Amino acid sequence: MVSIGGLDVAYGAQMQLVRTNVLCVKADTADFTAADAKTLHNLSVQRFHPTLKPDYTFCFTGSVSAGSEPSTAFASALTDDVEGGLLKAISKTPIAGGNGHGTWTSATDNEYRGMSIESILQVAAINIKDAATSTAEELFTTTEDGTYTNSVLDADFAGGSTLMADVMADAMNTYSVSGEARHLPNPWLDLSTALSQITYAGSVTDTEVDTLTDASEAATTAGSTLTELKAVLDEGAALISVMALCKNW
Figure 1 (spheres, rainbow, N blue to C red):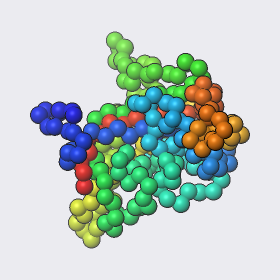
Figure 2 (figure 1 turned 180 degrees about the vertical axis):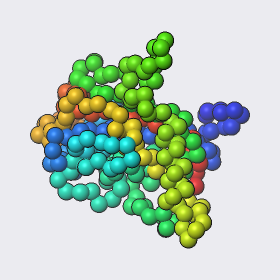
Figure 3 (figure 1 turned 90 degrees about the vertical axis):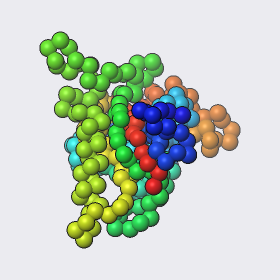
Figure 4 (figure 1 turned 120 degrees about the horizontal axis):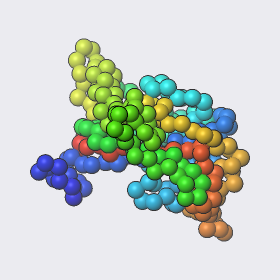
């Protein structure tokens, strides 16, 4: 249970603290198979520390701009918003615990049942590297002259306030029907702004991913180790983590 200013935020309560982790993998070209990406996602869930286990994995190619959807790395496009943990669009990331496997994509329907974002409390990101060299960044650390240092996200990104502003704009613009705001939840995180601030020194190829073995689907082996997984992700993957106060809807 968590208490915020006297507000009890326990499991089953109307208000809850929700962490959403997204593994963002930069590919060299759009040739990822869904099966290989699913292996990558499953292994990350199995091998990462509990606080780092990804709810979703997003595979993309090329550069990323704030407020725009990057190209996905799949040879064949995903059909649903989320397929087995694979995320179709970084700008439509469902809050974890919400519409995880649904196909709700329209603000004019009433299909969504889950979590609605009330406030973004924190956003963080790490660059994943081989061995024990992943970058544990102190976001927004400043020097005496006020400049930003040692950041994954640069000084132009204002953290949770930027993401919350995106949620607010989405609620004002997307959920307005026939001249009045619909009483629908804010279930989406637009993480394109955060992703655009992350610098990737390398990329991950489909051939590299194909060398991994998913422990949950391997009948005769224990699956790839964390060391083997990080060797594939080295310099070509980042993990974005968002803590939000959400309301059951």
